[in-house]
Image 1 (cartoon, helix red, strand yellow):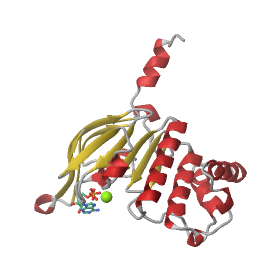
Image 2 (image 1 turned 120 degrees about the vertical axis):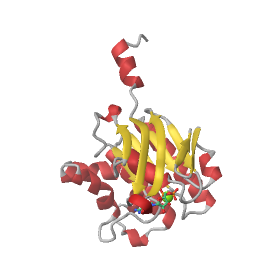
Image 3 (image 1 turned 60 degrees about the vertical axis):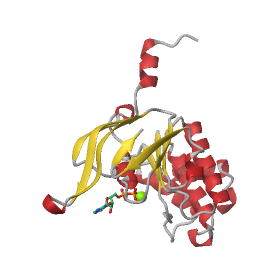
Amino acid sequence: MTVEPKEQAAEMTALVTCQGLSRSYGKGANALVAVHGITCELRPGQQVAVTGPSGSGKTTLLHLLAGLDRPTTGRIAWPGLDDHPRGRVGVVFQGPSLLPPLNIAENVALPLIIAGVGDAEAKERALIALATIGLAGLAGSLPEELSGGQAQRVAVARVLAAEPRLIIADEPTAQLDSDLARQVVDLLTEVAYRLDAALVIATHDQRVAARLPTTWTMSDGALTC
Ligand code: ADP
Ligand code: MG
């Protein structure tokens, strides 16, 4: 198949580019530099583990990549997302992220409804995502009825339903034993592959990092690609 130059260019467009990014908390003598001098980019389909000790800046970097936070200096852009990260980035957090009064299907549908998708379509997409991940049977359950591993798989279903181009997972397996951790990471990589999304997972766990093709290491706020 011949690839047209335009298609080739679109394929090569980075989802996110960062140049000389830094983020400080506080000002003056009390300023704490959480990340500094970060230059990196993420392309569609790329899968990256971000490792480094606690306090090295992993969460800060992930929040910047997701557009949940703004850099103090430097430049971040999302050329592959028309420069609008909102609604196109799926996020999985370390701990519980399901809203207790909503059932599982409603939890999975919620980001879609917030993004303006109609109730019926959001519910249908939520049920499809849950079924794809093998969790259809939990649709009517409440978050409190789920194990930690099930809750994290539901968080992945919620990402799948939203069909983002970029998936950011901040220590998604920190509260799981190693078998469950492997299942959740495998699920994240499968979902990213299915969506042709880029995937970034921050992790302390070398076994988790080893399952992804690329590792970036954070140290005192600096990134080694
Ligand atoms: P990691 O995720 O690798 O543990 P973080 O990005 O959470 O690292 O933190 C990097 C540094 O920034 C740490 O020294 C942390 O204490 C500090 N930090 C993070 N968030 C805040 C905040 N909201 N206010 C002040 N300092 C913060
Ligand atoms: Mg962190």
